[in-house]
Amino acid sequence: MIHNSNLRTSERGMVLAFVTIILMLAGLLIPPLLGFTFGAGRSAQIRQDRMLHVYAADAGVEDACFKIANGTALPQNPGDTLQYTLGEINGCDLDVEIRKEAGRLDYLVTSRATGYDGGTTRIEAYISGWNYDSFLDNALTSNTDITLKNNTLVAGNISLIDEQIGVGWKDIETNQLQGGVPRWPGSDELTKYYAEDIDGLEPLGSDITAMGDEEIGPLYVDGDLLITSGNASATLTLTGTVYVTGNLFIGQRANKDFTLDLNGQTIFCEQEITVVEKCNIVGSGCIIGLGDVYFGPKSGTEPGEFVFVMSVYGQLLLQPNGPYYGSLAGEIDIIKAGCEIYHPGSPEELGLDLNFPEGQTIPFIQSYCIID
Image 1 (cartoon, one colour):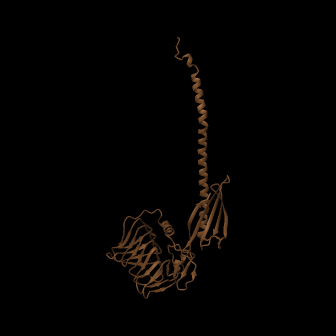
Image 2 (cartoon, rainbow, N blue to C red):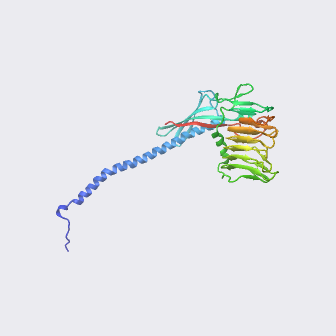
């Protein structure tokens, strides 16, 4: 059987022409596509290596923070340096330099990570070491004003941190520069310190009404918190940090008296704190607010115990109905005439353990710059 073809004589060889054109186009397109694919892969590898270098250099900064916190063989005089090698991290050789700056606890840290290809990543961080021991060594400490009512008795140092000097505090009575904290603390380092105590906790959704002997803490409250009592014999004992992001009100005139046992723990509040006369404070511990703090419990504090009350940015109003044993810090206004304030010695001297950064240096990164 004979089949007829519709291919005309003039169309012979067209298939070969089409195939040739396709091969030519492929030859033009495939090399750039392969180059783009290779370049993208290479770019991703470069970014990954860069990330590993940055992480390695950051490890050097963290190691320097650890040394500053623990006072490990640090340079003592401005301009002196401590240089050391941490070995290989993320495929990089890591070299660290800690340079002492002019401030009492200030350091410039340079961390350099060198990769297998000779490329380097350098991080410079300016780090200050915060040390709060002097707050507990003084009866009153302020960076602004201290106001005392008539017949106020203060048995202990009254000290003012000198922001202009930035290296310590002056004893008001002698006007002599003393050792101690380099400057007044900010909110960041204290917030970070106490936030670690409540990390992972679910926030409390309601206020607290004590009805008997109860324990609270660690406790995280996202918002305001009111602590009151429905039973005059109730005692609340802290067993961990109480962290409040809003305002804190302890005691209320319409409710019954109760006892709050600090038990060596800390109440930390990001806003204002008010402690009124329906609350008796016993035990040693810390009450710290970033805003105003009013401290007016029904009774004073007990001899042999140590209570530290601080307002970081606001005004600290003190009106206890009895002698106060411990330390106060902030813009202090003793609003009760004849108030008696006794500094019984540092908690360490008394054998007390408070949840406060005493006896340690907290490194705080002031600036952080990836140079190359």
